[in-house]
Length: 364
Ligand code: GLA
Image 1 (cartoon, rainbow, N blue to C red):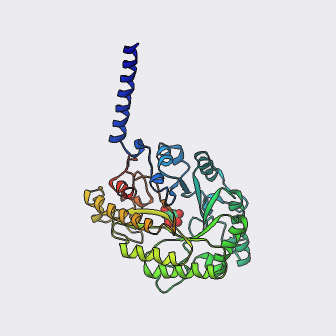
Image 2 (cartoon, helix red, strand yellow):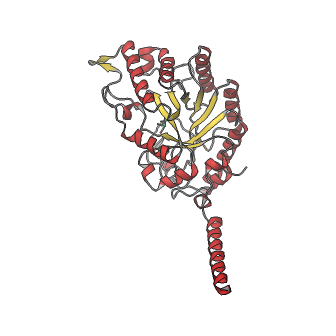
Image 3 (cartoon, rainbow, N blue to C red):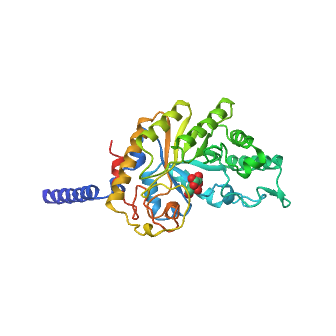
């Protein structure tokens, strides 16, 4: 009897040693804790996904690390509304179903943008569509999409990238602007609010750390707020790099938007290991070395560390941080600004294992 007890006790002792060893020597995936747990008292931590990612081996990593999803492409106007009379719901619905099964919140992205638009949108009978008809189409689109996910999507990027990158130009001369003037922006927010009065509505843009662009974003968002347009926050895309933003730039950006009294969300975070370039270009000889060197790793880690220190500092304002893609296996930056130049912009490596930058982000 005693012998039997001893051998059972030994068995459990060995088992627990084995499990502990696995935890200590293993990755974050084995430790059971994810980014969402480290940041539970701060903000949800999200990731942009395709429906395929949720069916792949990445699903476990996503489940363990993140508590918010953004559909990377599935809810953009082109993919979800390919013909005027036809919506394509399959991909968006499958992301929603996964989020529901896994108790994860969803940020909708996006309702009104100049890119990834369907062919039919800006024309009617071969001519440019009228302002009235375009606003009618916008309303139909927003009511249908927001209405379908009413109560399930907690926040929407309503208007994406309406501001010009040119220093002396305020709004981007997109077809939306050329056909409707500035009004399309507030209309988009009104339509979204009517379709789901509970949803948090964001204006979302990039290059937010440039003082010139930041002022324009501030001006737009403040003018909408002052007019009583239902806008609840500003999304800072945060497509950054090893050489920007500086701590000072990011601090002043977050402080500026904090003063506005709206929510701020970091909506598309990634940190390229190459110095920032804003426009696409051809591959050059100096792009040949695409390895993830210790130097690149070190530089990137410093920017990630600094960024999360500031997100924590502005925790009253920053109400969400979302990464744009899951791991270094695949990122849009592998093809932008240089096609085919491998980048390593995320916290997980090509095998889905946490990088050194990950441990810096969760160490506080
Ligand atoms: C912008 C858009 C995103 C995505 C990225 C690049 O930031 O808002 O939807 O297309 O560009 O992938």
